[in-house]
Amino acid sequence: MKIVVSGAAGFIGSHMCDRLLDEGHSVTALDNFLTGSSANLAHLKSHPNFRFVEQDITKPFTVEGPVDCVLNMASPASPKDYLEHPIETLDVGSLGTRNMLELALAKNARFLVTSTSECYGDPLVHPQVETYWGNVNPVGPRSCYDESKRFAEAITMAYHRKHGVRTNIARIFNTYGPRMKLDDGRVVPAFLDQALRGESMTVFGSGSQTRSFCYVSDLVDGLFRLMLSEERYPVNLGNPREMTILEFAEHIRKMTGTASQIVFQPLPEDDPKQRKPDITKARTILGWEPRVALEDGLRETVAYFRGVHAQNA
Image 1 (cartoon, rainbow, N blue to C red):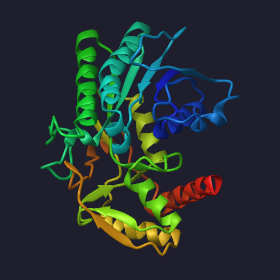
Image 2 (cartoon, rainbow, N blue to C red):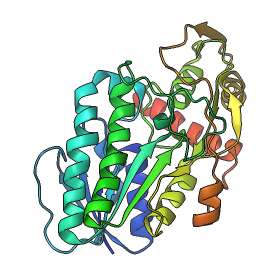
Image 3 (cartoon, rainbow, N blue to C red):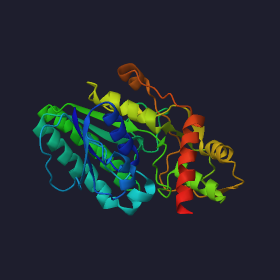
Image 4 (cartoon, one colour):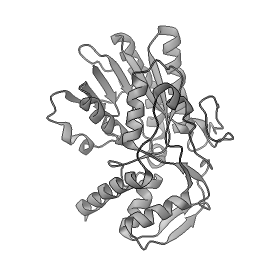
């Protein structure tokens, strides 16, 4: 297939490009490098089936030739990035998603949008199932991200209902692995950066809030399966193994062998207390579930960040 991927230079987007090319497809990759990195795609430069176009998808653009599938993966995704770029985050979720949907419509192509578990907000239902409508603050500091993704889901369903576009919606839970940015503010790179520097590891709140961590290759496998499916409504993709942030910090200390101490700071506004996906739907419809153990995924991730630290030394 000929596949267009926006947000291709991002953490998950770049791994998705790898998977698509490994499967024998052709990829046209789009990114404006607001938060993505050209280094994430450098290894694909000479690949015969890979083409990169520097493009802000909130602006009008065209793609020459036939397209079989459009993957809209463009958006700042870490709190640090979307709090720094709130308007761009809202723009890419709205204007950007519409432009990518228009491309899919014009090319009679499939369309997949990567949404987020943040659509559930600070959930009152646990674990989170796709039919739960969420508990989201529409005017809080995180709303630029939450609402941009909720709008992206709404317009995706509108194009499916109005124009018959073959759409898929992935709600992605916490994902980690190589190519994450050290300074993106998310818990995995934050803990690893602090641990590898021998600095104190910062836990917000009491550390009793929970998260579920999915290794990137598992997540990409779920996205690939969803892209080929006939499921039109949202599907959770994440690892249902739930742990507290404090437990996770201890895992990082053990994996890195650091002597870093844990320090506590106040919990940010609207930070979710619990995160655990119900993946019954993904298991049933896609035959998918995570396979990479946390310890194995962290081993790969720690090795990657050690390399980044060595480069920056």
